[in-house]
Image (cartoon, rainbow, N blue to C red; front, side):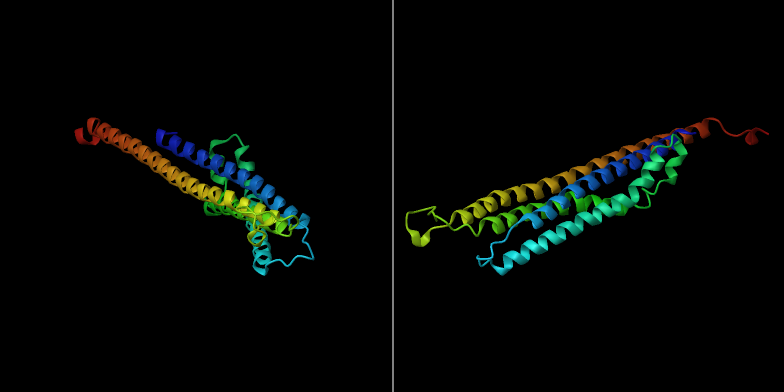
Length: 223
């Protein structure tokens, strides 16, 4: 096997292991977060005597449903593709990497990774905020004023708790989005630099082969 073939084999195996790691992380994250979302919807107890805002209930129901659907979709992709990659990665044969579907299913793997780690996590943050509003909003006993002692402008403890969770979660969500963008740009830059280095190595190998052909011409020229 030539040096170029060996490099291509190593690159294929690295892509296989990366795809397997992404699918494993997606399946674990999706199963965990979707389970939490289902438990939150089942365990939350709505107060029948409280007049909830219709938009709040619709937002909570829609966010939970979309959250579970997104994570289950990522989990389905991971469950379908991961066994085929695991079967190939456990075979101690360099040529068996071509039997893995990770190259052909690359877009599906990246989609599952994005749904699980980016979209699903952001929806989970929104789910926490909506859950706090649904859970604490009915608490109206012993209202306290957060600014003055005037009862006309007082805020109930439940509403205060919901506002506090929102104030904390909004900066956290912004930091999460900024980190996701920064991480994606750093990953793209890393891949670009790695591809450039591999291209430079291939160019050097091609130059060495060309110089070797020039220094050692075929015997037909001296016949």
